[in-house]
Length: 505
Image (cartoon, rainbow, N blue to C red; front, top):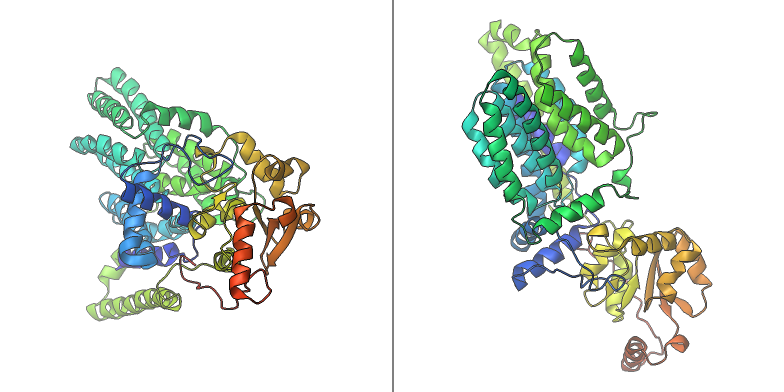
């Protein structure tokens, strides 16, 4: 029942309803791959990087997400990510209970580990890396516990992982580091497990080359790994406040194990230290650290903390057992019901918040047939790829998989209102500009010669090149034709009904 409680808590924590900014793009890309039967090798969705090489390292996961969405709508996506998270918790739980039965340590540790993992559980292809790492951890831990046959699954795991998400770099790196340490150790001790590890690591290295780009995918990973990313989830964990406090507690608990007398594996310490450092440097890596550190902390604290409430509980009467289990059961049902009610309030759909995404602006564009090369904020790019399929965007969440560094910097400069960002308007055939209403671009666009504002709402503004600056452009001809058809003297229709809040918005 304690395990059920932990799984229910995981379900509660992993059920985040708001749409991820890149979800629309992932579904669109997966749809194209599924329907066309091939993967784009150049970019068809932007105009600033049109025709550039596109390294889509997430293609298999995008196809999977699209098939789930196509069959079960966004409800299926919510269920998928919740079940995947619970399965990861199940893998880590099973590892622990194969070694120990201390319920107190189990409950306390997962009360910290699950909230650290939870922020990563958006509906995105990086879920494949969370699952891949959990499976790799399970395989390696069982291998070192004596089940040597299980290592045979690693090449297949790496084959699926490399086609699902770029986080395979971390998986192969961890596997390689552990193999190197064990090969050296076994060479000195005469043990044979080092040779077995080396064999399946090398087979895994061959497996990761089986992808649409071959070794070029790994050249891309090498080139992009050291590049900075001006994205919030790539920011550091602050050491001066109470944010990410569960992660900081896990770090302190890890340090505490150094004072315990129990034998430790050298490779495990090394991998966790590296993961901890990356977790503090980049918030998105805290999830990976939590998965890596879970077996280690659970095992060592179960050995050190001998007290457990279960032996005392077992001595009590059957009537007390029934009463305690009833109370625990009611609590579990209540927690599950609370989360179920949240699903019901959202009609079991992913929510598209109109104060986060430009749903009203997209509706206005659709009603008036406005489409063309569109400057758009970074985190609205893939939303507009989905909502305006005949438009091309200036930037989107694919980032360095498509866009050259100068284009990324140009869009960033535009977003911050810097003069060099104006090259988007001068050097490219930009027709439309969508800005966030309270960010820098909207202010200078109001005064920009050759541009006029045609729409605004509480979060966005839309600008178009004036008819005088491009009198023969097809877009203005279409606007004039629509105006004649309506015969109301107005150039643009004002849409009054609110867009749906349920995905896709």
